[in-house]
Image (tube, rainbow over all chains, first blue to last red):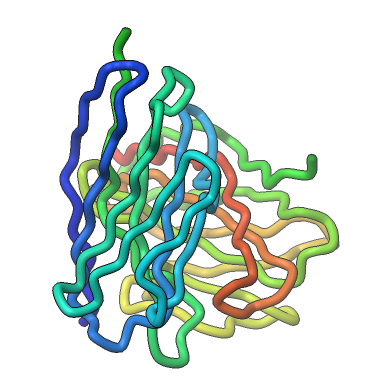
Length: 111
Length: 115
């Protein structure tokens, strides 16, 4: 079945860029997503990318997709303390509209 | 901004007991979902619900689980006889439509602890 892997923790200094990485196994993945979960809140869809794109930019967020290597990354420019959260990578493929999630990466931003 | 709410935030129960987890989806949404995340593991899909019936379910969603929309606002997940391995965070979500780009709005989760 589909599998999505991401590292569990990332620590960065405020003002630096953060890069959260994700790999997936399903070559038929058509949509790839990044969700953010702040403490005490639900998962919030941050951004998504179609599999026929290799980059998408939205303000401080840049998503890069390497379809050949099945690698997805989320770059947050000028990381702020408010960016501290858990970031989930997810994908959906084929006819399913249900995303398959990774375990989440805890981003810790320190001064 | 409308949001999905879940109650309780934390439920502790004894093994073998029945639990009902409650969710209030966003009022004009038509599709409802339950996911769970065992500590340290991935967020796993359990079930989706549309038009008063289950539209899709995973292998995890066995006969011990059931879902219901008892009135126009609540969406519940019942676990009939809890097991230790049911301990997890349970997330409810809702969406206006059921396509892959129809944003699912998640609730904050209910942490279920089975002793």
